[in-house]
Length: 43
Image (tube, rainbow, N blue to C red; front, side, top):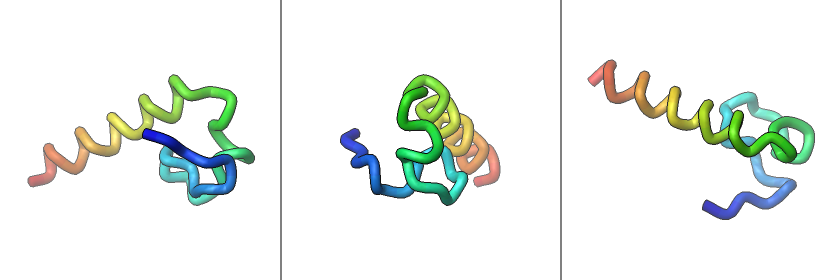
């Protein structure tokens, strides 16, 4: 997964990646996994 600094942050905050989780990759990946798990549980 290649995220540019100006792309929307994958954590779902709606902020640009550089203003959110750019320097904390573990947190952003954790947020993505949590969101995906929540969506799968809802199905």
